[in-house]
Image (cartoon, rainbow, N blue to C red; front, side):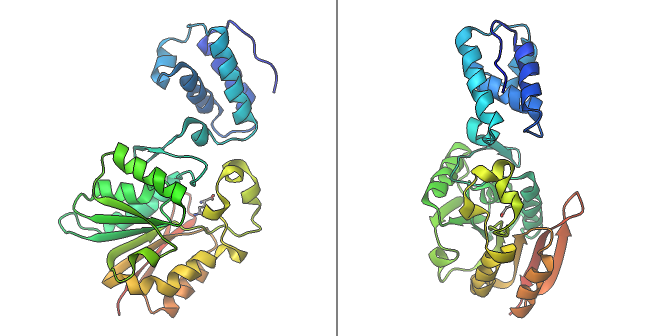
Length: 286
Ligand code: GLN
């Protein structure tokens, strides 16, 4: 990365920053703005209102340091500590997967199975930052939502998020899949478990390099967690209740077979906006 000049305006630093990050980020301009916002402790709107404001030396040095970190691949969400999901600012950190916009499809589909006027119980498997559990809890104030994760550090973040967002109808428990809900039943079980194949080159690129391996890698074919979940899920779903799982574009058929083997009905594939297979849902009948 080239050196950055001093005594420039916000506008000039943003132009330089965006140019520097263009090779390493899909959103170089936005990244530069977020980093500048961190330095000045101001929202992005301030940068647009005062583009001619000149940075002092200390601010310029801080900005340069942040640009360097981003340039070497550090995810922007870990640097700012925040990522928006379902229009909620969520706290995130290296202990959790950065919530993806893709996962809003899982939330949307789960909400379809949750009528607003009923007191339903919902389970989120592998909740991480709490994104899915919190979005559902916010949209369905009458629902009682439980988010499970095996990572203590993830649960701390998820609980912080619930507190900061003042969402009260959600609870987070440390759990190896269903261990912490033994004997309980849910109307809807949703999950975005790890499903990346252990040899997928995707793990060595972009943000994934910095994310917890535990939240992404699901062994050969990326099916290990789905197998573990499908072996047990039927014990935790009410009759006629729904199970919805986000998965990779090539995993619908193997997941469907696991669902069929456990006698689920109404197995339905949902594609994302780009036409890729993304979520499969099914209904527990017996
Ligand atoms: N969609 C994520 C990715 O591509 C994977 C999420 C997961 O394994 N649950 O990085």
